[in-house]
Image (cartoon, rainbow, N blue to C red):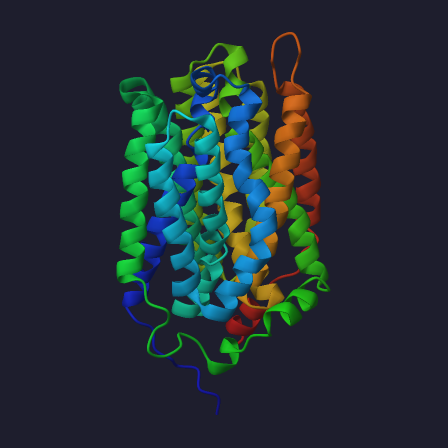
Length: 409
């Protein structure tokens, strides 16, 4: 008789928590300049696009580093790979604060932090698979991804206040200290694996990294999921990068822009708690991804057309709740349909296409803004159309075979 019982350990929650800490810090450093684009452009004497480059550097670097980082994660494990990302985040986060007055040196520091990003983010589903049973993995992935949103929301809301009170150099110094603390916490408490696996032995089997990569790209459901991530992550990266420029032509301040972006991510935090948990509870993935994309479209329509502040806040919350909850659920679904491909590889591919689309969408949104008013409404309408296309693609996805197998046990 097949053994269906296995042991899980309480330390899995500590492991998840320390992983979340370094994820949050890394994303805080990424989003730093988005809510203060105009102020930072004046401070450094560069264009708005020059400030956007500080965020885009993460996406550009990710394209180059993602696959090697996934190989390190799947070959050498969580503690080594995420440890590399944590050290880079701590060192260059602190350096960024020390060289704050120089745009060139800040950009170099951003690139150093960006190199560490895929070593951290690509490990989300690896942490879930190594420490959690299958029926908890979407929840664990949701919490790991939630840490991304926590870092972003802190950056969007807190940065304008710190910049106003302490100046941009003081704000970057504060974030440099935070980056060191986050890195030390991970290195001090992270463990590679529990004493025994949290799942049946058969679910522990994985393909070699590059074999898994080839196998994954032959699976139609995963390829379709990549298209969905291309649109969804592109929309998220584009909207968060240009959040101040989106709302400024309607008369909103940088502080209000930060609150709008922060509320969007707050909605994502709640969504990442609710939607993946429901998916685990009902043992279904695809219906909840369809629901998430449909809700995100409604929120994006609101962001595009809302002129009242409260309506804009409500739309931002709805967009965040649904769009950002689709992320962790999609990561886990991708890991399951790509099985036995290692989780770092499958997650890395999904994030990779999202970084590519983020660059395309950011440049596209800047190119299509109104020359007279600076409005980004035309480009937002295009994003709505792409989201509808992503929803239609999502309806073609088949249910996760690993989840169906778990239900049949």
